Structure formats: structure tokens, C-alpha cells
Length: 164
Image (tube, rainbow, N blue to C red):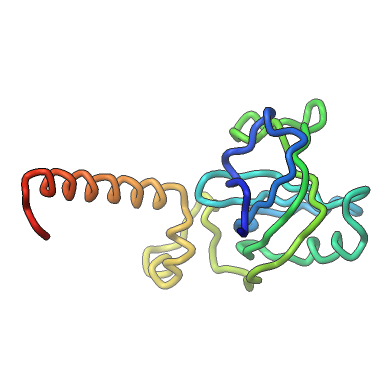
């Protein structure tokens, strides 16, 4: 099993839990000795800390080299964020995961745009890199809505003995 939890489901009640998360690197901040990664999947974002005492220098160096939109797997323990360091904008903003294992599942060259950037490029470029565009929250919501509508229609027709 690749993951035990999704990035959007961890809360303060999970503090002390060992977790395995997979997702895309939303952003990375190297603070010299510790690397902070915002890990994103379709369910949300979780802050991951790769630094002492849990991680050795090689692990910290590897995390420092990872690029945006690379796919990674981390294993670690859910902890409370430091006083004053919580992020009220995120559902997971009260916790972080202290990583003991870091693995790049698929590295990514610098993408032409990121799903979270506010000023999106033109439609031509977004269609060329459709796999990136589909990672945007707006596109995710549209796909879930479309799936729900199609399922409702199929259920209705099945209940009325239609065959498709």
C-alpha cells in the first residue's frame, strides 16, 4: 500500500500517528538544515518537514533537490505545528508531518505553469499540458461534479429498466 492517509484528512486528532503520504510537491522551502514541503493530492495539502532529528543529511539534501510537481512518498509522524506557525487557510494547518523517509516516485522538470499559480497561461498551453491543468482545484471540482451528474443519470435510467 502506497499511502495510509490522504493529504487533506490529517487533523490535530492524528498527532502521534505514523503516516505514509503520496502526492505532488506544491512548494518547497529550504531553511538550511530543514526542508519544508507542501505536499498536495486531490484531497488537500499537508506540510512535511524533512529535518533533524528525524532525517539525516542525505535525506535533507535529496529533499532540497526535489522540484515542483514531482511525485513523492514520505513516511513520518504527525505533530503539532509550533505556536504561531499554524495556517488557518488550510484544513491541515494545525499539524505537520515530520518525515523519516523520503522517496521521489517521479521527478519533474520545471513545468511551464503550476496548478496553484494565480495568473494562468492561455488555453493553448493549458491544453498542451492538460495533465497539469487537471490538477487545479477548479478542474478537480468540475470533474467531480461531472462524475456525480453522470452517475445520477445512470442510476435513474437503471432504476427505470433502461439498458446502456
